Amino acid sequence: MKFFFSLSTFIVSILFAAQLFAQQTNPVPLKTIPVKRKGVVIVKDTISEDSVARNGSRQEDISDFIAHLRHRKPSITVDSITTKPEISIAPAIGYTLLSKFALVLSGNAVFKTGPQSRISTIIASTSYTQNKQFTLPVQTSIWSKDNTYNFVGEYQYYKYPQSSYGLGSNSNIKNKDPMDYSYFKFYQTALRHITGNLYAGLGFIFDTHWNISDEGNIDGTLPDYALYGKASRTIASGLTFNILLDSRDNAINPLKGGYAALQYRDNYEFLGSSTPWRSLIIDLRKYFRFPENSDNVLAFWSYNWLILSGKPGYLDLPSTQWDSNSATGRGYIQGRFRGAQMVYLEGEYRFKISRNGLLGGVVFLNGESFSAAPGTGLQRIQPGYGPGLRLKLNKTSNTNITIDYGFGRQGSNGLFIDVGEAF
Image (cartoon, rainbow, N blue to C red; front, top):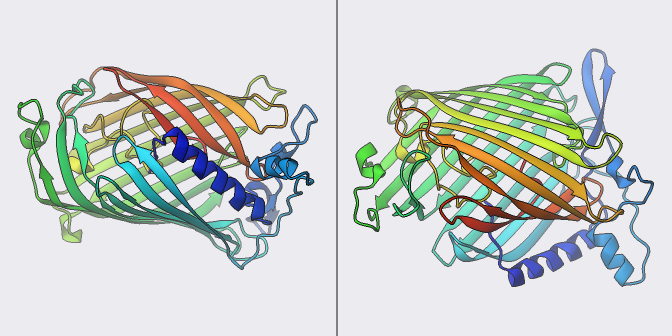
């Protein structure tokens, strides 16, 4: 989940992360070159092209900055990821408007299943907050030895008090309904290479919320949750059909290329669903160098999450920052808007501030529109916008620490800190 860090805790976290990466001798290169071998695409990992900028200056990250402070030479990164997992673990202290203070422990493991395979990853974190929220998300991406198959998993457990503000993008921030629930997610997808950058596959998907309770709107009005239909527990269990087209040069921070993903979900009562319902997620992204001969990037993102039929549980409806990366709607608190249909569009301009790439900046503008209950139409577009800074955490994978301040309507605003770009 994303955290809104206070300045002091942010500095503590950055210093710890800098020390961690300064000690890490095997950073994760994600730049890849496809090589055909007997009709199968083999992908060889290479150093990111951003390690030397187009202006000819050598690129640097936090570990290089610390090396300069210690009067040492910056490290030269080498691709040495093997079948033996490289493991990194980092604790931190965070603060969010939703959680207040939080203790966080994050870690990842990277490895290859074969000499020519793409890098497989396992990412996990756990946190406990002042508001008694507990989270344990795990994400996996495992490639087969010849890159024919990619097995993608997402597993989460949340004990997660969080307020709802009603249905539709016309909802008022004053209609706050404090809720509490436990949540477990199990998603597993198998993708097979079709041709070029195209993959397709099937998946099993399971969501359950239990011990659901609410206090009612704090202004005394009847909450949309009650009108929609209260339930102490809901289960959504079904199958997915997935198509993926990915031509990005770097999955963490692309300089060029595109990404298109489609997920059709069908939930069945015979698999345990409380009610049958169907949904469709269409995720489109495109990246351009702008100007063409620079390392600056103009990026666009369209994320559309649609309930096609049936009536999901209230907490299974599309909602702000409940996409897989908790990235939509910078400028608003998580869960601010919710409804049966979600249409989202964002543009961002990413540019260098320092020639060595250590410091960069962004400006972003997004808009989201939600319907209310199933069968209703889309409501007004709610904009979000703001500036941001980028601090290079790893020059090999081109990973940035992202620091954004977002503004929305009805006085909504906040500081967004994360590792990696929003999209």
